[in-house]
Image (cartoon, rainbow, N blue to C red; front, side, top):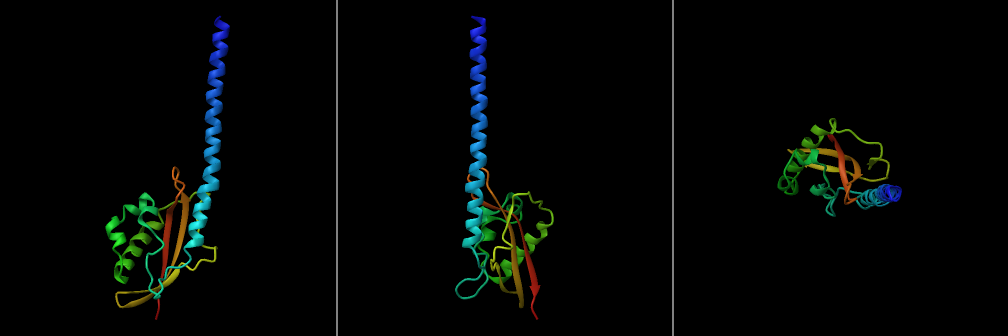
Length: 159
């Protein structure tokens, strides 16, 4: 009787361990297939910063996509209400102040090299700037939505 109970316990524990391993494997496969596909789809869909009237905006970037590091820099209201050149320029400066402190992981997906035109002209403080976004995405762990883990902007003053 003791041997049967011991075998039963072994079978139950083995089944639980096997179920955990299979669940973790399924999650990893879903993360790669769904999460990375969502990131690549976002890159493919957002190929420009300019609106139809050729004004540079924060258009493709949504506040919810930012990692917690970037959300600490500014509030949602400040980010979403940036609708003129000066406000957008100030956001860019805040974003660039953090970019050197953010570390990337091996599987992060960059917008560079996907033939995107995430660049534009920004008019701020009476000066004309050429800007170019460099964005690194990673899928969020539970929702598999794209998250911006590193974002820096090249800002060049045009003469």
